[in-house]
Image: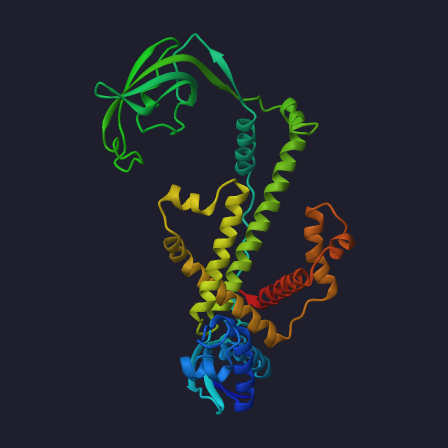
Length: 426
């Protein structure tokens, strides 16, 4: 077998093959041996007819397809290695000559990883901007903590107000007809939360314990239950109870509940955490900006097959996340009214950007000859080990060759990003 290589475009190549007549005949013999039992020829027991008899009966090309299937995977694999081709899609086949007693001649065109034309990635304008933490930021964070630690206490001496939690029974009517799904008992609702139909909660402000209130609302036009969409209805509501939110006092006792001796210590810790959070946000934003601008300097023609593969990976990630939530992907499609094809199209632009970023960073890696050290790879593995409460050595013993390659690539890409950050200037 011989093969030649042609580069058609920056992301497509052509491989030309010539398989000797002798090798093609061997493949025909193999195809005959594997398939002879399928043929029932008069005068011969099933599976015992000679090859030439079957060819006379069904035509000389009867074993061509099976013989080609014997040859192609082997010669294609050898040619890929010989010419250092990285296919990213299925090859398109064109058979020029396939005849008994003659060389088998064919070619394939296949999309490959595209050439990346690097731009001026060493001259990037980007700046890390860290937001300052103000006293108001600290106060707002503490107020959120107080709200999380608040509790509702029963009140009987006043009507319901916004932010109160009411306990209600209700039944919804469309004219004289009570509609399905519009009834509940002992329902707890925070007034002003916006959890119910617009206008419902406002009409309970001012109600007292034990009072019956008719709440008149109109369902939104886009309501999921089509029979009620846009319809005016009335809910007969009975108020069982009212509770108001009691927020803990801002003092040393609250600080102790939060794990500190004094309020000042608690405030100092809140401020330190906000400073750290702002620094992390700024670092992430800076990294994203640097990578985005570096990728924008590069030019490449991305094969659709790479985008489709990226979409496949995104769907698999989505399926895994849903599985952890106890939901199947098909159930998600049913609940959202979307199809698999619609979700694929929704992911397409993001997938293309993901592929472009990967190719650009890998091209910069190769241009700069960036490699991760063993220590840097171990640092990546250590993150997983820490999350699983294992030692680094125990974690490394459990890794497959594929896992090791993944961590090597992750550490290398981190190093490329650090390199680009070092190239950035204001």
